[in-house]
Length: 380
Image (cartoon, rainbow, N blue to C red; front, top):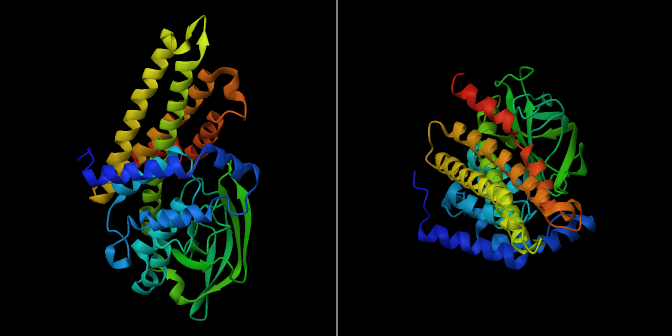
């Protein structure tokens, strides 16, 4: 694997860094939270992100995209994560968009992906349920035959950006029960369709989530994404890609939290010297630096494994998520502690990273889940 960046990749990363630095700030994030913004993000900023072509990075040129890979997309997501930008790239591109990209028919790709790439349509994936605990195959939502179509009934939780998505891709059980892999089908559902009820919620870090209830929602045969009864493999593909995208965002967040902490260690004076000169704090900062670099390697390796694709790509994904979950929490906790009393206040920005770390840790499986998954994939 080639961990170094090409000139084009470095330019992409620099552009994303400049965009996040110049067009957003933690003051904007605080205003979105405190103002209870109806969207939870900036539509104008989203249009600018689309104009830069970043929404088209992972999509094929034939679908209107740039035909690049996960490595390139993680470079952008890392910089957006550094600034905690809440724009719905993860939900639209790596959840909903990836489901259409990897499982959609030619007609679905032609009708949906250009609008996604152009920033004109928001998508998301509704896959989590009350008792699923990260298991995408534990599906109680049912899809019953109704003529030549289907009727969907059930409830989905923690649907990212569900209240602003134009369309939802919903996992439902068409046959079988429990957590059987066979019998799961994905359906494309309009958020405004009859029988769809979406209740906006917010996660710990004030990001968008939603509770989605489906009460006999009628869909046509053309709404099926992928193959009937064979949606589990498509879910695996989509969720793994979204997990790596989240890891890249987490990497940027932990780097930003570390930078805030280093700046404080260099400027806060005690006993007439910067507190960063104290040996104990030097050791803690050095340890955190090495942990972040390990996380960076894990994220890049997972992204490149998906791009190859590598036979053990799923293992790479779980290594990255376990590493990033632990390291982001460590970076945020150390940041708050080394800031002292001011770090405990809402007025200081370090708290935003602590909340994001806690929420991201529990998204797409926490560290314990992914260590267990890795062990199972390795045959233990």
